Image: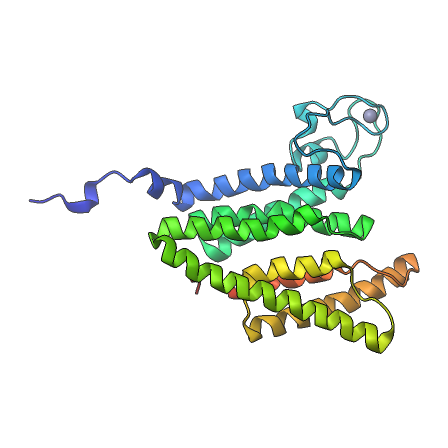
Length: 279
Ligand SMILES: [Zn+2]
């Protein structure tokens, strides 16, 4: 009698990518990255280094926050949104960023399955949530975050090429798709901007938005269907955001970032990254 593969113990990678292990791993990574996203949102606009070991403190009493105060989402819920020292209210902005980051990671896993490429995609989550937060508050998208989106695309391509055993040829093919997408979305958004400026005599978006378009293109590729879906979602979300902004704040100028990021997430989850074969 031959035992065959049935009796063999699973390998480490089979264990790592089994649902039993990958679900809790995704939740853990999502929460840790959520915490990282709040650090990005707080530090980048203030010019504080991401790697500096500055203590997090309460904005009201200056108490140093301990690990007990800093467990993503849970601390805020358990402490009912108040500082343990002075009882000052802590806004829901940070737990919301943490929660959104976690949900994005879970979404990537649910859509793309357990793989090295999906683990690379988790890196996108904190970058995306901090872009939305920073753009809502400061109406800018930091260059470092736009660059990160393109760099993470490269990381995911490398992970997929190594896991798929395709070697440099596979990487080159994937890179071509990403580069075509960067050009299509980058140039497309510049043409769109010039057109609007000619017709309406006003500037619809900043260079930060255009750089974001180019970085998003690296993921979405140069396909016409994806681009059409992107413009539809971005346009609808943009109109909604403009109306909301005018009603809530009475401002004509609204941050366009959240609208194009929503479009990016929707199209990415729908068609998958251009450089990955997903059903
Ligand atoms: Zn306090």
